[in-house]
Length: 114
Length: 116
Picture 1: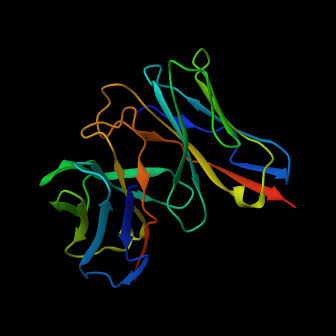
Picture 2: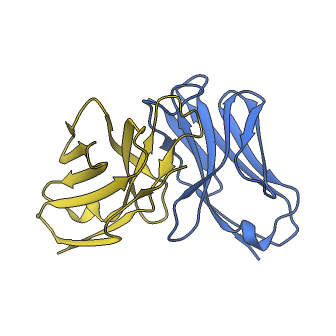
C-alpha cells in the first residue's frame, strides 16, 4: 500500500513541556487514522483515532489534528511526563480497505528529559 | 472490557524446531484477528488475518502458518523455524469483522522469538 511516514525519528522534550509528533500520509483515499504508543518490550497501545470528517479530536492530555489538504496528521501531548517516553506511530486506512487495509508508519521515539 | 492474551512473552528456539504461539481474546465476539511481525527500527508487517473461524488470509509467503480453531483463539505456527523467523510477534484484534475501517486494532504484548 501507500506509505505512511514520520518527519522526525527522535523527539526530545523537557518534562512538563508539550510534544508534537507529526505524520504524513500519501493515500488521499485514507479516511481513518490512529495513533499508537509503544513502550519498550510491549505491544502498541491505542491512544486516539480520528475520522476524516473531523480535523481535531481531543483525549486526555492528547490532541490529534488532521489536515487533509496537505495529508498531514499530528499528535499533541500536553505537559509531558516521564511515562510518555515511548515510540509513537500513526496508522491509516480507508473505507473498503478490508482487514488488510491498515498501514503503519515506522514511529517516532519520544524522549522525556527530566 | 476486552482483553487480549499472548504467550509466551519470550521464546528461544533452535533452527529447525517447531513453533506455536497462541493468542486469545476475551470480552468480544467474532473479532478480526491478526498476526504481525515487528522488526527493530521497522514498521509492523501483517502476516495473517482472520475474519472468522477457520478463515485465514496470508499476506506474505513465508515459513509460518496460522490457524483459528475457535472464535477468539489465533495460533501462529511453524513446522521448522529458520534464523530469519526471529523477531517480535504481535497478535491483535479489531471489533468490526472483515474490516479495519472505523475500528482500531488492539494489540497483545507480543512474543520475542529468537531462533538460534
